Image (tube, rainbow, N blue to C red; front, side):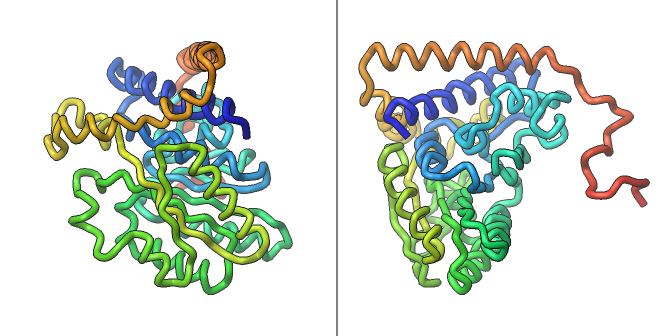
Length: 316
C-alpha cells in the first residue's frame, strides 16, 4: 500500500460520507446515517494490511470499513438509498452493509456483536486449514458488552487469528468514555492475555504499521491482537443530531478534535499535484457512483421478504 493509495482511501471515505449526509438532508437516504467523518485513517490503515482472502466485520458506523475493504461506492450509495442495485438489494441499509465476495461479513447494529462473528469466522477458516485473518471494528462503547469480552476469551484461549480494533472516539453516543469504562481500554484485552496497544488513529500510516504487525502475528498462529485506535468523531453520532442540536460537546472541543484530520495528515505526504489528481479522481468516481445509485429502481414491495431468510417459504 503506497502513500498515495492510503490517501485515496481516506479521501474516498471522507467525500462519500459528506455526500451521504447531503442525501440524508435531501431525503434520498431515509432514516439517517452514523457518519464516519474523522475516523477514516483507521479503516484505511487496517484494511490495507489485509489480504484479499481475509475478512472483516463492522459496526453501525461502517461505511468507511466497507469502502476501505473495496466495496463499490455505487452499490453502497444504492444500499443507503434502499435501491435494488445496493450491496444487499436495498434490504440492509446503512447499518447492515455486506459483501461476502470481498470478505465483508457485514456491518452490525448491535454494539459489540460483530466481534463474536469475526472470531467465529476466523476460527472456522482456521479449522478448514486456511490462513484467513479476521479484523473486527467496534467503538469504545462496546468495551462494556459481554459479547465482546466472550470473544476476547475464546480468541485468547484458542489462539484465533482475529484483530480486535477499538475505534475510541471518546464517546459512546453521548457518554464520555471516562464516565463509562473502568480501568483502561487496553487493560480489558490484556486481562485475557491478548497483546494490546494504543495507536494514533488519526495517522493512517501508524495504523497500517500496527495492523501489519497484528496481522502477521495472527497469520503465523500466535493468536489475537487488540488495537485501541484513538480518534475523534468530527460530526454527529447520528445525523438526527443535526436537527436535535445536542450539546454534550463544546465548540472548543470539536475544533480541537478537528485539528488533527487524517485526510490532511495523509494528504501532506503527497505533492500538491498528486493530491489534486487523487481528489479529482475521487470526485469523478463518486459522481458516477451517485448517478448509478440515483438511477436505480426501488425494490418491488411484493418482494419485501426475499433475501431475508436462509430458506424460502411462508413466514409462520
